[in-house]
Structures are given as C-alpha cells and as structure tokens.
Image (tube, helix red, strand yellow):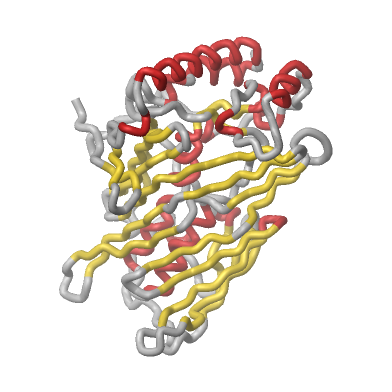
Length: 396
C-alpha cells in the first residue's frame, strides 16, 4: 500500500462538521413533497428525498468515516496474548464507531455500482514507522440497498462487510435498521511464530436506532436493541445492549469445552459519550495478563485498561486521505449536489439530484440487476451468501 498517494484537493464532508447538519427544515414545499411520498412503515431508501433532509455525502462516505476514524484501536489485538482481552479490544473499536450517533439527516442513497476509496496512516503499535489502513466500498445491490466494503492494513488487520442500512418512517419518528454482518480478522502468531487468522463476526454493522420527533417536537436519537460478537476459534462471545442516553451494557463469555456451558469472563457498562467500564471475572480460569511489552506509541493511551474499556473524550481520530477517484465514485457522482447543499442552494441541489436519480432508473431498466452477481471490486458468494472482496485495483 506504500504506493498510495493522497490528492489534497479531495475531501468528504462525512469527516467535517458544519451548520448544514442542524439547519431548520422550514421550506414548506420541501416538507410537503417529502410527506406526500410517505406511508406508515415506508422504507426511506425508496423515497426521493428533498435535499433539505440530506447530509452532503453518500452512505459509502459515511461508512468510511465511521469505521476508519479509530481503526488503529484494533492494532492492540495483534499484541495481546489473552483472548478475552482481544475480544475487549474488538468491542472497544466497535463502540468507538458509534460514539457519534448523528442521524439528524440522512446521507445520499448510493447508486448501484457507486464506489468510494480512502485511507488513513497512523504510527504502528510498536511505534516504529507507520501503518496504512485502506478502505474501498461499492454499492453492490440497489434493491435491497447493500453496501460492501473492505478495510485492510499493512499490519495484518482487516474488516469485511456487506451490510444493509434501512430507514423507515413512522409518522413522527424514523427507525434506522441495520442487517448484515461485519468480520474483523487479526493476523496472529502462535508460539512457533507461525501466522494464523482469528476472526470476529459482528452480527450487525451498527445497532438499530430510533429518531423521535422528526417533524415536530424536540428531536431525540437513541441506539437500541443488541449486537452479538463471536470468535469461534477461541469460543468467546459477547453481547452488547443499547439503551437511551447512550447507555451500553454487556457481557463477554467463554464456552467451557468440557461442559459446553457459557462462563462469564467480563462485564461492560457505561456511556458512549463518556466512559465505558469493564470488569474482568474468572471464567473457569484466571485472566492472564499479556507478557509481551510493547514500545510506547501515541495510540497506547487508547488501549483498554483493567477497568476502563473506552474513554470517548480521549480518543484521537485518524485523518482520512483520498487518492484519485474513479469516475463513478461517490465524490464525483454527488459533487454538484454536495456543493449546492453546503452552499444552502436546495433548489439547485434538488434539480441535479433528480437528474442523477433519473439516469440511474434508465440504467436499471436496461440491465437485470438480479442477474449480476459480480461487481468491480466484489462478487456474490452463493455458499456464504456474502459479497466477498476481489482485490484492490492495480495502480496505473
């Protein structure tokens, strides 16, 4: 990945906070247009949203921002000898992805075949040199809308996902639902120095969320429901429960191979916008601390301690960089729509957005989407029923 070069002229507003996030929705024509398309339980990815309701970026850009920002946290798992604490590191990373639950507006619905590429660089866990984490995403299905993406680092950490994000309208509230798992892979070494892969399957890319009072009243946003994480090679699982006010609680359990019973290894509880605590327990055996001592790096302060799993205010986000983009990339497709939204020109944004959506309808009519099981960077695997990564593009 050393050949990756950033284009300083490119940026994504998914990485930037701005006043567009909190603009009052006061254009009655836009509201009337929006409400006229809705019914109870209406799935919002099938609705042409007026620009006043949109963030100035695609769902592919939003996924990159969420999952890359603190990807360096997973590096600690490569140097942690205790499997329970490796699970804790994976949980810490997952929670870091949702410390920002901003659903005040929605991103663009990605077009079929739309792509997005970016990367981050950060110091290696041992403090010598840098690690590059590269992200590539593609909208592999239009109905249902499925986003596939891959993150891969030079250290031996990777993430694969093919997930579906849905938003449904319920009169004065919107529910945000996620389906499809993500798989985190760590390249570890056994006692002889031989490398092996350890996989963590997270059953949902994000917890579900509920946005209340979207039309009138004081708007509130809460994560809801539960998320399960499983590592089959270590027989360790975790469940995280989410509640209002950003509260999370959960457990890490170890399956006893002799009795097949689950034994409690650790408990988790706290607030995503503040501190999430962890308490380790004996699960048939004492939790061993890693004997490996690593050199100091600026990211080590983010690693979980014996009592604190996550301190959101102390996290240091990575800076996202953007290489030259393909023609059918998010940054190119939505460039004019984004410019108009940021400038506050919603009328012009709606015109350009309608042209893009009309062009997609023409493309979909000329090809049977269901028959296409292979995209540019991903292909559908019938056995696993997942979109699997084919490989990064070869540089010119």
